[in-house]
Image (cartoon, rainbow, N blue to C red; front, side):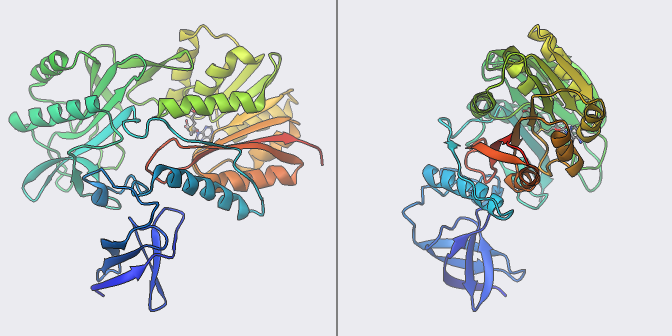
Length: 444
Ligand SMILES: C[S@@+](CC[C@H](N)C(=O)[O-])C[C@H]1O[C@@H](n2cnc3c(N)ncnc32)[C@H](O)[C@@H]1O
């Protein structure tokens, strides 16, 4: 094709892309809102790109990001914030409708801080057409969008990333070449404790040599007193996975700390920690409010990561059984419980489905369960065992309402009823939707 045409956007798809038709053929493009007229360019692969908005929607807002049209991370930045929340609310409602469930969003939890909310930054280094670049990967590609300023990262993260890049260029440290599998520096990972103001710098290299590392450490420490540790992670594999197994601590202890709802957490390069602390704390508070557990209750924290939900709940319940399949996350969870002097959580490293099966066979008395699985959701066997264990209170937390709705429909078919729901805007500007569905057993 290779066509320039004026179109009208008829609706948004569930990713936030604008849908339009040309001669009954459907196309999609980012940066469009319903009822907007725009000039689009359609290339020979039938990919559409908006060139000019002719009649802007009243719900459109000025995009302040310079790399918006290339980066593809923040799909909804052109919508005003209220509209972004509406989009996420509808996504949740529609996901449930697909399973025949009519549900409302009782709490739509927007964010105060819509920019600079990420406590983690991850950038790649690449040589493209003779130019050294650092930044994020373009959507569905391995090209780099050179970073000038990213709205969701903090100024401090940006300044540290700029400094490391300048150092690489000035000192002619070889940037890794994916095709030739040669070169040294591959990625930079930064983690920032918003409460503690501590920063961790992780430089990912191919091979274990990082030239002039002692000078880099000296300069980083002197320019940024917030940096508490610098780690070199060695990743010789040619995969998309950023971190390798081996690590060298170049400065500090190899970890930082941060707080969530007054509890202290140790964060290492590989440990999972929610990226938006403001919204995470609101979400954890909603879990506490919805379930309203008793101090004698036995509660399962399933898919528990580094134990954050169980740890913040520990003062309010009798006992917690925490299950997580990632060994490193369980080790971190145990450290975190010790840091907070918590003695009523049992940490189990196991597949959640297998663990629930064991509990059901032993007929363990459980009053409540919190489920926070990965995007693909939970399993039928896991859900059946919630019923076998006669667990009254189920709090289902999810970053994918579609699989959450699928699993909730199974629970409903076995006698559970939805009591309360919440959608949390954890990733402002993006099309990611985080939600809580709280259910109670009401009988067959
Ligand atoms: C969305 S994260 C949960 C994070 C945690 N609840 C929190 O709030 O920080 C999902 C977790 O499920 C774990 N996981 C994935 N599959 C699992 C399984 N089959 N059994 C147990 N845990 C699993 C992952 O390792 C990950 O830590």
